[in-house]
Image (cartoon, rainbow, N blue to C red; front, side, top):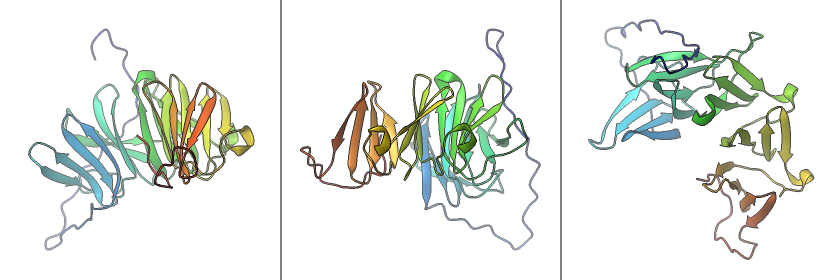
Length: 256
């Protein structure tokens, strides 16, 4: 750590050495089912149901990482790259522990999602690295977990804190405000301790929100089963097959 930088306190568990497979045994995994991807310095990382794939885009060569190499769990639900302060590839699993690959060391470690009361988070579905605010946002079936890079502490925003989302599908940030797509429960805006629902009851279009993404002008695009919704300056516009836009498709599952 350089003197001018603030050291971090991110909790990391070091992995024990993994024993060799018994003679005559071979490990098989299927990495065809991709759950999430991220590109870092001309290398694509893919979280799959059969491990994590590292694909060199120049040489077109690939390596599959499994639990034999240090993954917490063979199934990866999402993957992001984040500096904490070292650049790390972070992978979310069904367990309450993240797999972390240190790019400079070339080694896997574990980051437990443990809150001050000793509880953990299960079924991590999506990850978002909020580098500007020095935090990692983790969406699961139990709510939203926030890791502060400077303190190393986790904070949970779930049902008890006013976020009734049973499934967080996507996360993005405007300034310090957090937006989450919550499937059948529409979307939520989280500003500090204030949680505001964006659904039919609050004057927003009703229906499930499959995904959301913040544009360069800080407006937000939402993916619905009926099309797209654009939100800016407290106003929204809907684009779908039944609107004047006449978009020639219905369900929007991903927005970028």
